[in-house]
Image (tube, rainbow, N blue to C red; front, side, top):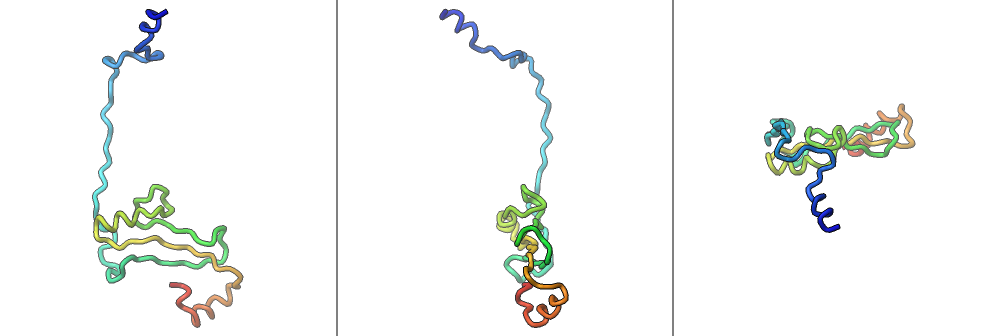
Length: 118
């Protein structure tokens, strides 16, 4: 029995021995840390714009503008790391759902409450 267990050590389930396996070179993608926003609103710590829409499924959706999100086109917060590495100030586009407001009242709201639309 012991000799049988020793014979099975190194069994590779149908694969060729490791010495005869050919390995293809992997292609590497290099992402350089460069600013995305060279001159737009550079006096702000982080550029975040908001859009208010009356017909959305979710109350708030953040869209990526740094092009580095692993969940692109949705923002996953990767811009924070990018901004620290490059000195950039890019942030997400926030799409907000405006509830219980008719479209014809939207212009009146903008006129009297522009701070709601950031």
